Length: 114
Length: 115
Image (tube, rainbow over all chains, first blue to last red; front, side, top):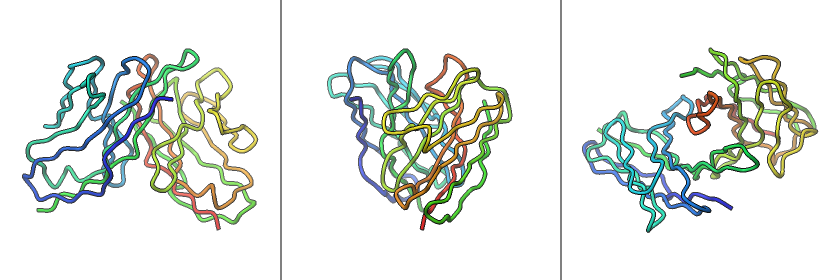
């Protein structure tokens, strides 16, 4: 079935470092892809999305490009801040039985130190 | 957008007992979901509880073990019945507006430990 694989964490970076979180997927066809973020003490929230190949999603300085040829959707940020400390989840949407469902990766915890 | 609250935030329960988790939304939403996140694992969808219909359970989850109520458009409960240590997880509810399943708003979760 459809699945998402993320790089394992946790990861600790210094402020202003470059961030890449790898995400690859296995799916039938070309599903829409998403990054969700969970800040400490809060619920998951949608960070960005891409709905077709070569689309680039962006938000809050984060970017991810939908790469069909490598079935990847890596998340990047050029200069992380302490406030980016959170857990990041890659996800795809699957259509089954006429309804849509999100399929998540395991999540990766990022800590950014000043 | 929607703001979700869950109660309790955490609990420690004895095996064989049941726990009911409440999910409250600050606006009326059609679609509501319940997930489980076991230690070191991804979120797994338990069931979808849409307004006006019975909850739909995913493979591996049954109503007798995880009964769900959805009395109105702003509230739902998930009960974890006859608990065992394997039920120790974080349970999350989320909501989405019709046609935007990809954009779900999540509660902060309920951390359940079964001893």
